[in-house]
Length: 269
Image 1 (cartoon, rainbow, N blue to C red):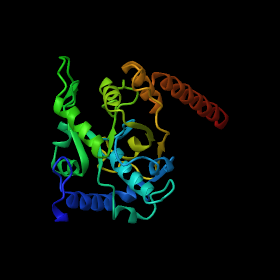
Image 2 (image 1 turned 120 degrees about the horizontal axis):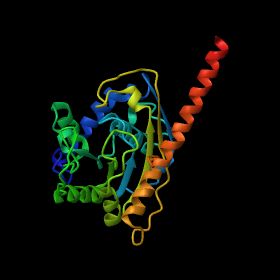
Image 3 (image 1 turned 180 degrees about the horizontal axis):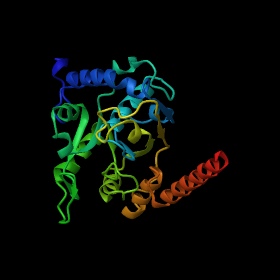
């Protein structure tokens, strides 16, 4: 029976479809209503194959980033151009979308556990535990990398290669190893405004009227045979605009803006 069709992780697709419909309907106004999600590059989504696509993105909240991606991907596949207008795209959502998330985050409550059913690939972070960095080196769980491989074979995978919501943290080499080993099409996404719109978990609205940006870039040009892990890491950092050189540019822009404000205050006085 269709009701009992499952994905490779044992999740019943009928239940997953309804979870996407329900949570998508609940969250839609957070991106189109209370706030405005400005999308660029959605035409790239329509031209991607059905499997072995890896989305890489900077990270600002635990859940709001991923939810926005489910909205944008499904709206784009339904023919909407840089828009999530009219939530009819949720009726037949793409069911083979997965996202990489920390196991401790997805086990932190009832709601995260429900959201995990939508498509979480939970991994044990080797560098962080219970919200704190760990000093001792821990081995990567081979089951985690195997699950990412399975997900890529079945569909699309979203990952946040910095492994944290803090800006300009180093990209983890594990993402580069996944890219080199499994050779997916790598699509960068750059988001902004989510940290101002939501709390850290991305479950509670913090402020309304925020312009959220969601930029989808062309797939990365990667030489899977000859690019080193370090070269791939650098390409990822530049693609998601988290390379240290971007920090210098942002700092300069902030300084210029502050100087303008100071000059304006002088004239007002």
